[in-house]
Length: 145
Image 1 (cartoon, rainbow, N blue to C red):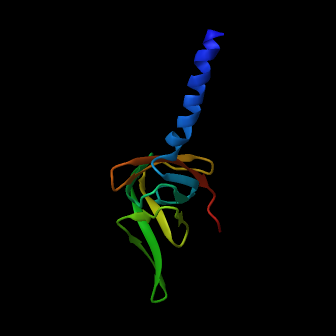
Image 2: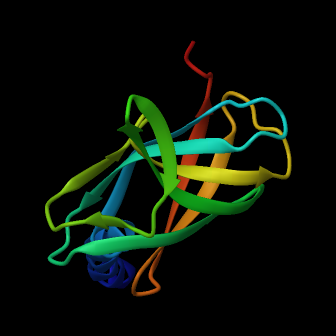
Image 3: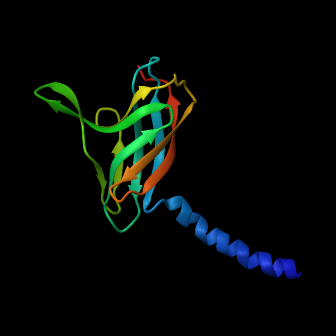
């Protein structure tokens, strides 16, 4: 009976801090995916980033297992031509969801060190302007044709 009296409060404590640990400082990530690319070619990263915290968060850097480096990019239409440009930050206001998608904001995974196939997981770490790191997995999916 004494073990039960000890474990019950400890269980409640662990359950209460679980969501805080998963929250990652106000940002949550959903539907992270990366389309397959031919061997040796850079890849793109897409996802939804939700800011559930009270402050604006700016993602300024990233890294990914199996890649030399990660850049933040935006695709825009200029004079009838699609252009992809590197950007300095992805800013997510409190309560906002930022969608990284084909033809818009996205991550560029550059200098692949191996080939990735449908079903593989790419481990990403995104860094905000305060130096906080956010870890997530991106699933490799077949490229849409």
